[in-house]
Length: 152
Image (tube, rainbow, N blue to C red; front, side, top):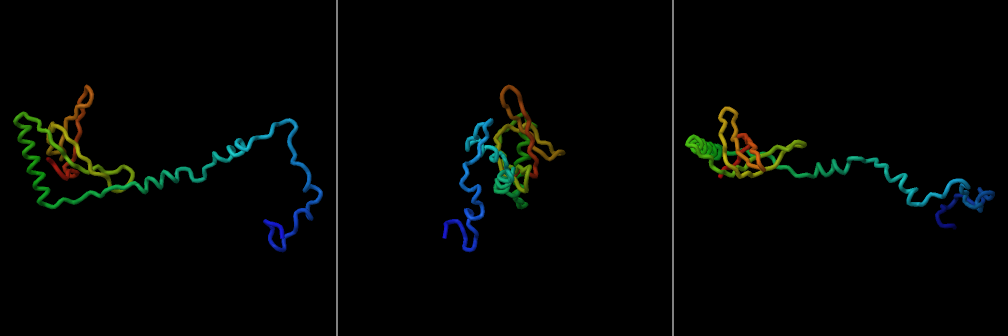
């Protein structure tokens, strides 16, 4: 039995005897394409475009925002009052704030820390406004009270 043929299949030499031993036809006017160029015709096709990006995004880890106990919330409020008193006296204390940043693409987010001088505390808007000095200008960042989990 010939390799690659299953039992009961007809032999190709018996079916196509008139063409089986002919040389491969080549165009007299066009050069033969290299194997590299032939393969390049098909390599641009991407049936699953964006799939790997989607899988990476799904694998990306996010934290969920923790719910602080009442005692921790009271402790944060007391620290915010002390900072507000310092600002009223004309000082701008430098603090480290740990807060939650929600993810823009999926549920959850991450916790980040920022160390900066406090410009003001906006009680009506429920946020702490920080003074960041980057380059020659000044950028004010605001952190919502509900996102803060720690102040030191």
